[in-house]
Amino acid sequence: MSFNMTEPDQITTSNESAQGGKAVIEIKDLYKSFGDNHVLNGFNMTLMEGENLVVMGKSGSGKSVMIKCLVGLVKPDSGTVKVLGEEINKLDQQTLDELRSDIGFLFQGSALYDSMTVRENLEFPMRRHKEKLGVVSDTEPLVREALENVGLAHTMDLMPVELSGGMKRRIALARTLILKPKVILYDEPTSGLDPITSKEIIELMRSIQKKYGTSSLIITHDVDCARVISERMILLVDGINYAEGTYSQLSQSTDPKVDAFFKK
Amino acid sequence: MGKTATLFKGAKKFFIEIGDLSYFGARFFKEVFKPPFEFKELMRQCYQMGNRSLMLVTVTGFIIGLVLTLQSRPTLIQFGAVSWMPNMVGISIVREIGPVITALICAGRIASGIGAELGSMRVTEQIDAMEVSGTNPFKYLVITRIMATTLMLPILVIYGDLVALYGSALVENLKGDVSFQLYFNTVFDALSFSDLVPATIKSFFFGFAIGLVGCYKGYYSKKGTAGVGVAANTAVVMASLLLFVVDFIAVFISDIFYEL
Ligand SMILES: Nc1ncnc2c1ncn2[C@@H]1O[C@H](COP(=O)(O)OP(=O)(O)OP(=O)(O)O)[C@@H](O)[C@H]1O
Ligand SMILES: [Mg+2]
Image 1 (cartoon, chains in turn green, orange):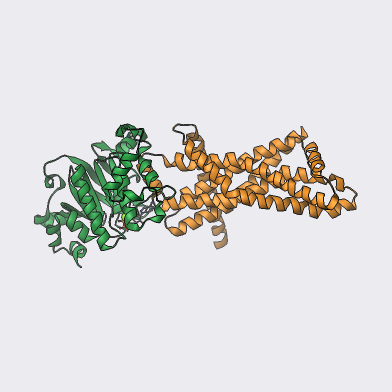
Image 2: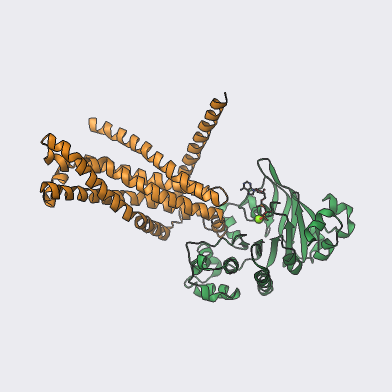
């Protein structure tokens, strides 16, 4: 925060930065500690409709904790988290579950259910949200469509152990998309993948965004990924939104903590 | 000073664990009657439990029956009481040995399996993924498993009893020229309702304890692959201990009923 004050060229308070749309995610003064480990110390963030926002931070800086607060998997110590206009921590279980069907979450390690086939993995989110999809009787076309979106229609009856890391990530993405979410949260979509597969995943993310017009929050420490996909970036350092701006703005910064991210 | 402090710390940890486990059990009872019910998953778990332990129960049951009979023969012959063999073996297997051995086998096989399975689901965020997709993971994973162990263990115990009795009958048939029919007739004459009912009720509790501990350890597994191993391991130890505590209480209670 203090850094923003001293470097006027990079000041963009989150509300001004967007193209005048409405906010789909708003985080205000988020605090979270685990014992003595103060992970988030007043983090602020706004994601506008249709925007691609990248949050970068070192390993262990609390990116996953922050993104988990957005879906109610982690309860913050204080601060407000609003997603699609609803304050997450004030919802009862049922409303929260309904809201969650509008939020896609791609987990850092894919998190495919390894006791189920690919098809069952994709059908799983539909169990509780049949009303939303309308068609109840046959899930096959939906599963097929989702798999075709990620180019893996032939894997429908395989088990997750039979897939490579990159394929798993793509299936996980397909599972995330199957409920047609309005917002997608990506937790390190390219981590642990080789550069070529990473590129494929990034391409996929872009084509999905174009096709469905979703808003995306992308967490990463992969600078290339950030450069290609981000419209705006936030650097998470010491538990706060240390700096914000576009990729080119931030990459030219002279602040050592910001610069450290972009050094090759 | 240092030793008492460690002792105190250990005791505190033990009681915290007991408290957490009771809380976990209470949550089971709170949620088990609330819809939605995961019936299909329950059936799948029941099938898996039976499938995983049937072979082991068969082998151990058979050997226990065999060995028990071989070991007691000389003594019974000494007292000229070898014709009491079916009664003695039958009662000890049905009342105590069958349920306890089967439950211990299942603690080793199933509690550790559940601990490892849920532990790895926790570590790889599959449980979080379930929650995010609107399915209550406690209902889907924990309740179905605890129900499955509770329902299946009595069935496995009865099956194990029968196999053990068969093993015993085999020895008597070969060594003592007792026909299978005579052997089993004597056993069933010797057994009364008051032998079978407490043993079966006890088995339900054994099953519940196995499922509860396995799920508890797995569900709250620590991060990292080491956490999964620890979950599986401690699940077996804790489940086995709990089985003996349950057994003690059960025998204590049924003893009161015998006296009445
Ligand atoms: N459930 C938890 N209990 C205790 N500490 C936790 C928990 N979850 C996260 N932490 C701690 O919070 C800190 C931030 O973790 P987090 O997973 O958010 O990091 P990250 O920024 O996502 O890192 P990476 O890039 O490696 O994924 C770490 O120090 C971690 O130890
Ligand atoms: Mg992370």
